[in-house]
Length: 321
Image (cartoon, rainbow, N blue to C red; front, top):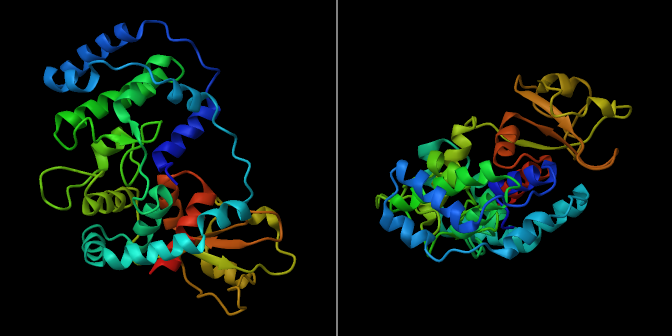
């Protein structure tokens, strides 16, 4: 799945946005304004010329932006598509091949290496497909179009600052049509705040350096409040007569309270009666799969604000190591 947390957020914004507005100025005039603003932010003419000379709007980007399908998958469809045996096997190989790096990342950021690998797997199939769009071209097209110009103009300027920093060349700065980049599928503004130089070469290369990419995912989760040595959640079975209205992410109470209400593991054994704050969610139809979720579930949602996504990450993380 190429859509990153950043791309998924962009998609959500798109669904909520007003109808597309026509651009109010020529593309060349728009680029001149971007050049002036980028210069004020410290981007050199050499970088601007290399990134912007000859740039034209990408009609395919506009088509994709305006034709994003509504999300209609059920939980079962979403789960089965993302937790295929091929993805699980790929995650196990990726974990084994990068074990030393993942152990170093976990030690530095105090974030579960299994969850880092699971996010990597859902975002780009462990780096198998990170997107083929020219990021500068895509962001310039979306910023000029007028539909969400302020958002994408800020992302375009952030991308130009990344080029100025020497982290990647314009030719290698590729990703999704909406601007999500590299193995973690970061938007440029998130790169600014959260990308990490894990391999020590002076660049934060989330396109070509797996250590940098995995550390950047971990840093994102750490900065979002990850709690070391706490799980994300687990599947449970609910007692007969359970009030479905109590199954809400916002309805938290100590796990021991849910245990007293009869919530148990799928095999019928007891959950530990801990003080950890927990909630119950039922992602599909009433009577379907149920999960108890802990604070780290909400941290995963900071990467992509979807219960389906966070559940898929959690379940995949349980299977890859």
